[in-house]
Length: 285
Image (cartoon, rainbow, N blue to C red; front, side, top):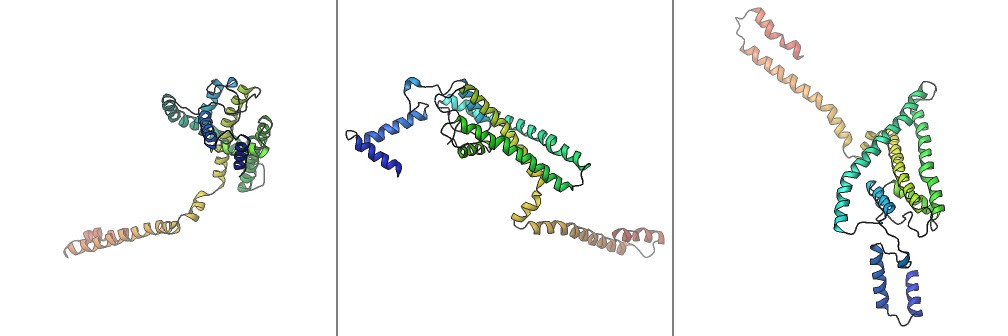
Protein backbone atom coordinates (compact mmCIF):
# COMPACT_ATOMS: atom_id res chain seq x y z
CA UNK A 1 0.00 0.00 0.00
CA UNK A 2 2.82 2.42 0.85
CA UNK A 3 4.59 1.72 -2.45
CA UNK A 4 1.37 2.34 -4.37
CA UNK A 5 0.94 5.70 -2.62
CA UNK A 6 4.53 6.67 -3.48
CA UNK A 7 3.91 5.60 -7.08
CA UNK A 8 0.80 7.77 -7.35
CA UNK A 9 2.46 10.75 -5.64
CA UNK A 10 5.50 10.57 -7.93
CA UNK A 11 3.38 10.44 -11.09
CA UNK A 12 1.27 13.31 -9.76
CA UNK A 13 4.37 15.43 -9.15
CA UNK A 14 5.73 14.63 -12.64
CA UNK A 15 2.78 14.75 -15.05
CA UNK A 16 5.08 14.71 -18.07
CA UNK A 17 6.22 11.18 -17.18
CA UNK A 18 3.91 8.35 -18.18
CA UNK A 19 3.34 5.29 -16.04
CA UNK A 20 4.76 3.00 -18.76
CA UNK A 21 8.04 4.94 -18.98
CA UNK A 22 8.46 4.94 -15.21
CA UNK A 23 7.90 1.19 -15.07
CA UNK A 24 10.39 0.59 -17.90
CA UNK A 25 12.97 2.75 -16.12
CA UNK A 26 12.59 0.85 -12.86
CA UNK A 27 12.89 -2.50 -14.64
CA UNK A 28 16.11 -1.37 -16.35
CA UNK A 29 17.47 -0.14 -13.02
CA UNK A 30 16.73 -3.49 -11.37
CA UNK A 31 18.40 -5.38 -14.21
CA UNK A 32 21.46 -3.13 -13.94
CA UNK A 33 21.55 -3.68 -10.18
CA UNK A 34 21.54 -7.46 -10.70
CA UNK A 35 24.73 -7.00 -12.76
CA UNK A 36 26.41 -5.11 -9.92
CA UNK A 37 25.65 -1.56 -11.05
CA UNK A 38 24.58 0.55 -8.05
CA UNK A 39 21.15 2.09 -8.49
CA UNK A 40 21.27 4.61 -5.64
CA UNK A 41 24.44 6.55 -6.40
CA UNK A 42 26.21 8.12 -9.36
CA UNK A 43 28.24 5.86 -11.64
CA UNK A 44 31.28 7.99 -10.90
CA UNK A 45 31.26 6.48 -7.42
CA UNK A 46 30.90 2.93 -8.76
CA UNK A 47 32.82 0.29 -6.84
CA UNK A 48 34.00 -2.91 -8.47
CA UNK A 49 32.00 -5.83 -7.08
CA UNK A 50 34.78 -8.29 -7.95
CA UNK A 51 37.79 -6.76 -6.27
CA UNK A 52 39.93 -8.97 -4.06
CA UNK A 53 38.03 -8.52 -0.82
CA UNK A 54 34.63 -8.99 -2.48
CA UNK A 55 35.90 -12.14 -4.23
CA UNK A 56 37.28 -13.38 -0.91
CA UNK A 57 33.92 -12.77 0.73
CA UNK A 58 32.15 -14.57 -2.12
CA UNK A 59 34.51 -17.55 -1.79
CA UNK A 60 33.92 -17.76 1.96
CA UNK A 61 30.14 -17.64 1.69
CA UNK A 62 30.20 -20.18 -1.14
CA UNK A 63 32.40 -22.74 0.61
CA UNK A 64 30.30 -22.51 3.77
CA UNK A 65 27.09 -22.92 1.69
CA UNK A 66 25.70 -19.69 3.18
CA UNK A 67 25.49 -18.09 -0.25
CA UNK A 68 23.97 -14.64 0.22
CA UNK A 69 23.65 -14.29 -3.54
CA UNK A 70 25.51 -10.98 -3.64
CA UNK A 71 27.64 -10.89 -5.68
CA UNK A 72 27.24 -13.82 -8.04
CA UNK A 73 28.90 -14.92 -11.29
CA UNK A 74 27.32 -13.72 -14.53
CA UNK A 75 29.53 -15.11 -17.31
CA UNK A 76 29.45 -18.76 -18.34
CA UNK A 77 33.12 -19.15 -17.46
CA UNK A 78 32.46 -17.79 -13.98
CA UNK A 79 29.49 -20.11 -13.47
CA UNK A 80 31.44 -23.21 -14.60
CA UNK A 81 34.36 -22.29 -12.36
CA UNK A 82 31.96 -21.76 -9.45
CA UNK A 83 30.48 -25.24 -9.97
CA UNK A 84 33.88 -26.97 -10.00
CA UNK A 85 35.15 -24.82 -7.14
CA UNK A 86 32.09 -25.65 -5.02
CA UNK A 87 32.19 -29.40 -5.71
CA UNK A 88 35.78 -29.55 -4.50
CA UNK A 89 35.80 -26.85 -1.85
CA UNK A 90 32.54 -27.49 0.02
CA UNK A 91 33.30 -31.12 1.05
CA UNK A 92 36.84 -30.12 2.01
CA UNK A 93 35.63 -27.15 4.05
CA UNK A 94 33.04 -29.13 5.97
CA UNK A 95 35.47 -31.98 6.54
CA UNK A 96 37.84 -29.53 8.21
CA UNK A 97 35.01 -27.95 10.20
CA UNK A 98 33.74 -31.38 11.27
CA UNK A 99 37.19 -32.47 12.46
CA UNK A 100 37.62 -29.18 14.28
CA UNK A 101 34.25 -29.43 16.02
CA UNK A 102 34.93 -33.05 16.99
CA UNK A 103 38.27 -32.13 18.58
CA UNK A 104 36.62 -29.23 20.39
CA UNK A 105 33.96 -31.64 21.63
CA UNK A 106 36.63 -33.88 23.13
CA UNK A 107 38.61 -31.00 24.63
CA UNK A 108 35.74 -28.90 25.99
CA UNK A 109 33.16 -31.55 26.90
CA UNK A 110 34.41 -35.14 27.12
CA UNK A 111 37.73 -34.55 28.89
CA UNK A 112 36.32 -32.13 31.51
CA UNK A 113 33.43 -34.50 32.10
CA UNK A 114 35.77 -37.37 32.91
CA UNK A 115 37.90 -35.11 35.10
CA UNK A 116 34.93 -33.85 37.14
CA UNK A 117 33.39 -37.29 37.66
CA UNK A 118 36.08 -38.28 40.13
CA UNK A 119 35.85 -35.07 42.15
CA UNK A 120 32.13 -34.30 42.46
CA UNK A 121 29.19 -36.16 43.92
CA UNK A 122 26.80 -35.21 41.13
CA UNK A 123 25.51 -37.98 38.89
CA UNK A 124 26.96 -38.37 35.41
CA UNK A 125 23.73 -37.38 33.65
CA UNK A 126 23.28 -34.20 35.69
CA UNK A 127 26.94 -33.29 35.21
CA UNK A 128 26.55 -33.75 31.45
CA UNK A 129 23.60 -31.38 31.35
CA UNK A 130 25.35 -28.77 33.51
CA UNK A 131 28.50 -28.81 31.40
CA UNK A 132 26.50 -28.79 28.16
CA UNK A 133 24.40 -25.84 29.34
CA UNK A 134 27.52 -23.83 30.14
CA UNK A 135 29.13 -24.52 26.76
CA UNK A 136 25.93 -23.76 24.83
CA UNK A 137 25.46 -20.52 26.77
CA UNK A 138 29.01 -19.45 25.91
CA UNK A 139 28.41 -20.28 22.23
CA UNK A 140 25.23 -18.19 22.18
CA UNK A 141 27.02 -15.31 23.87
CA UNK A 142 30.20 -15.32 21.77
CA UNK A 143 28.72 -16.07 18.35
CA UNK A 144 25.21 -14.62 18.46
CA UNK A 145 24.54 -11.92 21.06
CA UNK A 146 27.92 -10.15 21.13
CA UNK A 147 28.46 -10.19 17.33
CA UNK A 148 24.93 -8.83 16.91
CA UNK A 149 25.98 -5.78 18.95
CA UNK A 150 29.01 -5.33 16.70
CA UNK A 151 26.97 -5.58 13.48
CA UNK A 152 24.40 -3.18 14.92
CA UNK A 153 27.12 -0.60 15.46
CA UNK A 154 28.90 -1.04 12.11
CA UNK A 155 25.86 -1.40 9.84
CA UNK A 156 24.07 1.91 10.12
CA UNK A 157 20.67 0.75 8.86
CA UNK A 158 20.54 -2.44 10.98
CA UNK A 159 18.79 -2.69 14.30
CA UNK A 160 19.93 -5.14 16.97
CA UNK A 161 17.17 -7.61 16.10
CA UNK A 162 18.22 -7.43 12.44
CA UNK A 163 21.82 -8.14 13.40
CA UNK A 164 20.81 -11.06 15.63
CA UNK A 165 18.65 -12.38 12.81
CA UNK A 166 21.62 -12.10 10.43
CA UNK A 167 23.85 -14.07 12.82
CA UNK A 168 21.32 -16.88 13.13
CA UNK A 169 20.52 -17.05 9.40
CA UNK A 170 24.22 -17.06 8.54
CA UNK A 171 25.50 -19.60 11.06
CA UNK A 172 22.68 -22.01 10.22
CA UNK A 173 23.77 -21.68 6.54
CA UNK A 174 20.31 -20.50 5.49
CA UNK A 175 21.74 -17.33 3.97
CA UNK A 176 18.62 -15.62 2.67
CA UNK A 177 20.60 -12.61 1.47
CA UNK A 178 18.20 -9.98 2.80
CA UNK A 179 20.99 -8.72 5.09
CA UNK A 180 24.54 -8.70 3.70
CA UNK A 181 27.35 -7.03 5.68
CA UNK A 182 29.71 -4.54 4.10
CA UNK A 183 27.41 -3.36 1.30
CA UNK A 184 27.02 0.24 2.43
CA UNK A 185 28.95 2.89 0.56
CA UNK A 186 31.64 4.77 2.42
CA UNK A 187 32.24 2.18 5.16
CA UNK A 188 35.53 2.68 6.96
CA UNK A 189 38.07 -0.17 6.95
CA UNK A 190 35.96 -1.98 4.39
CA UNK A 191 38.61 -4.59 3.52
CA UNK A 192 39.36 -5.55 7.13
CA UNK A 193 35.66 -5.68 7.91
CA UNK A 194 34.94 -8.18 5.11
CA UNK A 195 37.86 -10.40 6.15
CA UNK A 196 36.71 -10.38 9.77
CA UNK A 197 33.18 -11.34 8.70
CA UNK A 198 34.51 -14.38 6.81
CA UNK A 199 36.59 -15.42 9.84
CA UNK A 200 33.53 -14.99 12.05
CA UNK A 201 31.47 -17.22 9.75
CA UNK A 202 34.07 -20.00 9.76
CA UNK A 203 34.53 -19.93 13.53
CA UNK A 204 30.78 -19.65 14.05
CA UNK A 205 30.07 -22.70 11.91
CA UNK A 206 32.61 -24.70 13.92
CA UNK A 207 30.87 -23.54 17.11
CA UNK A 208 27.45 -24.53 15.76
CA UNK A 209 28.76 -27.98 14.82
CA UNK A 210 30.16 -28.27 18.34
CA UNK A 211 26.72 -27.45 19.73
CA UNK A 212 25.21 -30.14 17.51
CA UNK A 213 27.74 -32.69 18.81
CA UNK A 214 26.88 -31.81 22.40
CA UNK A 215 23.13 -32.09 21.82
CA UNK A 216 23.62 -35.43 20.07
CA UNK A 217 25.51 -36.77 23.08
CA UNK A 218 22.71 -35.78 25.47
CA UNK A 219 19.65 -37.11 23.68
CA UNK A 220 18.76 -40.76 23.20
CA UNK A 221 17.83 -40.45 19.54
CA UNK A 222 16.73 -44.08 19.21
CA UNK A 223 14.01 -43.47 21.78
CA UNK A 224 13.04 -40.19 20.10
CA UNK A 225 12.78 -41.76 16.66
CA UNK A 226 10.75 -44.65 18.07
CA UNK A 227 8.06 -42.14 19.06
CA UNK A 228 7.60 -41.00 15.46
CA UNK A 229 8.31 -44.09 13.37
CA UNK A 230 5.14 -46.11 12.82
CA UNK A 231 5.41 -49.75 13.71
CA UNK A 232 8.79 -49.39 15.39
CA UNK A 233 7.53 -51.16 18.52
CA UNK A 234 6.23 -54.03 16.39
CA UNK A 235 9.55 -54.24 14.59
CA UNK A 236 11.41 -54.38 17.90
CA UNK A 237 9.05 -57.07 19.17
CA UNK A 238 9.50 -59.07 15.96
CA UNK A 239 13.27 -58.86 16.31
CA UNK A 240 12.98 -60.34 19.81
CA UNK A 241 10.61 -63.14 18.73
CA UNK A 242 12.36 -64.09 15.50
CA UNK A 243 15.41 -65.80 17.09
CA UNK A 244 13.10 -67.87 19.30
CA UNK A 245 11.16 -69.04 16.28
CA UNK A 246 14.38 -69.97 14.50
CA UNK A 247 15.49 -72.04 17.49
CA UNK A 248 12.15 -73.87 17.52
CA UNK A 249 12.43 -74.64 13.82
CA UNK A 250 15.99 -75.94 14.22
CA UNK A 251 14.97 -78.10 17.18
CA UNK A 252 12.01 -79.62 15.33
CA UNK A 253 14.24 -80.34 12.32
CA UNK A 254 16.79 -82.15 14.50
CA UNK A 255 14.06 -84.17 16.18
CA UNK A 256 12.57 -85.25 12.86
CA UNK A 257 16.00 -86.24 11.58
CA UNK A 258 16.64 -88.23 14.75
CA UNK A 259 13.39 -90.17 14.34
CA UNK A 260 14.23 -90.91 10.71
CA UNK A 261 17.69 -92.20 11.62
CA UNK A 262 16.26 -94.39 14.37
CA UNK A 263 13.82 -96.00 11.97
CA UNK A 264 16.71 -96.85 9.67
CA UNK A 265 18.73 -98.58 12.43
CA UNK A 266 18.25 -102.42 12.28
CA UNK A 267 17.19 -104.26 15.47
CA UNK A 268 20.36 -106.37 15.43
CA UNK A 269 22.75 -103.47 15.91
CA UNK A 270 24.90 -103.44 18.95
CA UNK A 271 24.04 -101.30 22.00
CA UNK A 272 27.07 -99.09 21.25
CA UNK A 273 25.61 -98.10 17.89
CA UNK A 274 22.22 -97.43 19.48
CA UNK A 275 23.90 -95.26 22.06
CA UNK A 276 25.75 -93.48 19.26
CA UNK A 277 22.52 -92.67 17.45
CA UNK A 278 20.75 -91.95 20.67
CA UNK A 279 23.37 -89.38 21.58
CA UNK A 280 21.68 -86.90 19.25
CA UNK A 281 18.74 -86.56 21.60
CA UNK A 282 20.53 -84.82 24.49
CA UNK A 283 22.18 -82.37 22.08
CA UNK A 284 18.88 -81.53 20.44
CA UNK A 285 17.20 -81.00 23.75
